[in-house]
Length: 336
Image 1: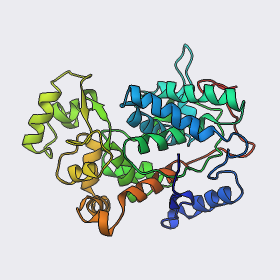
Image 2: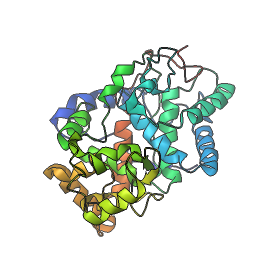
Image 3: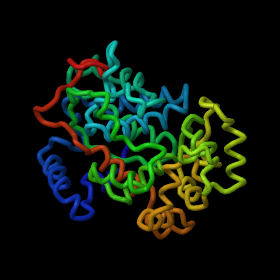
């Protein structure tokens, strides 16, 4: 599959707060530790194999595409992009994936399937962490999103702790908490908006809407007062009290297509989950949402597809393990 080179291959450094982390990342890229085409000689079929597995899985179940995109987010925001989310806990359920913040996480078997094929081709070469990043990239492309290059060369981490996942963003988080969690990973308000816009595809379970619709703030006071009445009625018709399992599109009216509809919905009060709605409660994020949700932005910029690809590359570079650190797992669900 041909890929155009994204300017996200060498992420831009935005702001003094990111300077140190960007210098480290740039050094890693220049030294070949994290680079586009890392497996071009050691395992030439690595990227095409992952793409094939993702495509076949999506043909059978298109909902796996947004699930794979979510999987990378959940991996990178806990201990960095090191594949720690793939480790299965034992009887004590002490692995990262057992944390309730990972509830509903899917696609782990897709990563394992790609790993199995790659182990047959190139034993001990391609890391599970890189497979996660490549699968997310391909999932974006297969839903109509941008195609972009992903620097590879990550190695797998050797730690997976239940409580580490407490740091993940939550659907109940307000804007200050969201900004803090993104900044802790070297990401700014623009990245927050762009990566949240991944909700342009996929669904959420009514479980994550119960408090917002019926017990906002945990006070028993009813619904979030910022939800427009017509939209509240629509959501309640889909998610009755106590209904945890019914699924609702995150992007009202456009849940199967990669586009900017999610940002227009956030701007107009039609965000499904609270953390999406929170983006319109802060001047900095409001300005970013507005800049992409205008009808003319596709022609005159800012260019959402390119900027989203760049944000994905930045996220995929959080806390990477490279060089002689970590390991390359033989099976993604357990340490060597």
